[in-house]
Length: 193
Image (cartoon, rainbow, N blue to C red):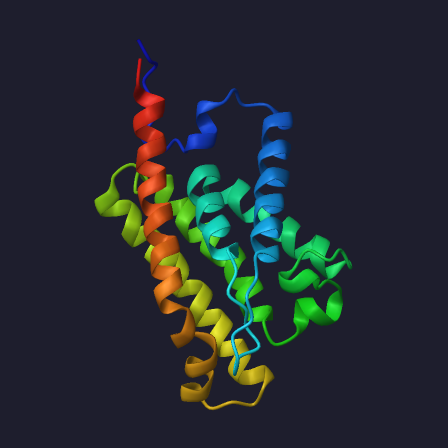
């Protein structure tokens, strides 16, 4: 028989709460984001590559909750800004962290917070609530990313949407749906006797 899980628990809370667990999960989620960044495809006409980062960010927020999810993305952002080549296409350093795609990087932190907050309220346990939670996280990443892209490249709003949103919608719908299905599936496995 399995133990009762608090309604505010995340998947990370199913593991014994220790400082080592927290550090390991944060480092692991940051590493997953870095790995997702290296799976990168450039699209003509946009400085933004297609990557698996958003998938990793959504999973980090939902599985770890607000505090640890945010910590994982802050760690990813900080290590890359310090010069480690962990951003998309092996980029790293302050110029990459503050360049044209910086809004997406900041969006990762905010999206992890929001998706984590929703997960702490049980939105990661059923597909009907998990997919909208992942959609909210993706929308945040796009809002911050496209806004900074427009500012950084002195683009109109429509040009920034064409370069930083439109080419990615199909792939990101697949990624958010996969994340939205994965979390309830993981909860179902965790509840098995």
